[in-house]
Image (cartoon, rainbow, N blue to C red; front, side, top):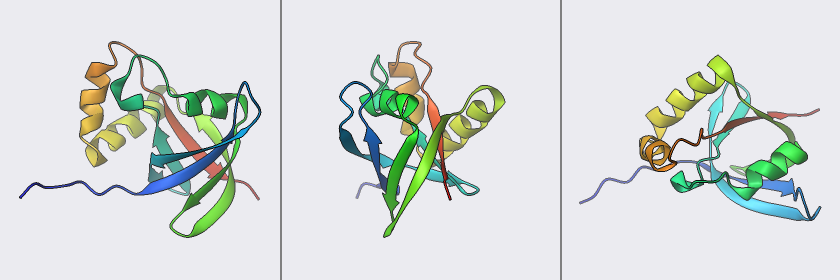
Length: 117
């Protein structure tokens, strides 16, 4: 019997950076306090995923998870915050360490989402 890692998913609805169209992307996440945290791993690909650029261009997003939907603002973690969250992400999902290696030197972004009032 194989062991599977069950990770929570959210639906991120962002506005396309180039098109302005609403885009829905299912993503694995974890929480850090009252923030949702998402890793832009792109499965270890050489480029960041499209949703990452959408959030940078238009940080106000809608997130649905666990029967709840709200409006959030995305922020790319950097420095010590990014390092802490990245290590936390790898502790939850060990395959992120493989993605880091496969990314060929690309620093995998970590984004946080804080709910707006």
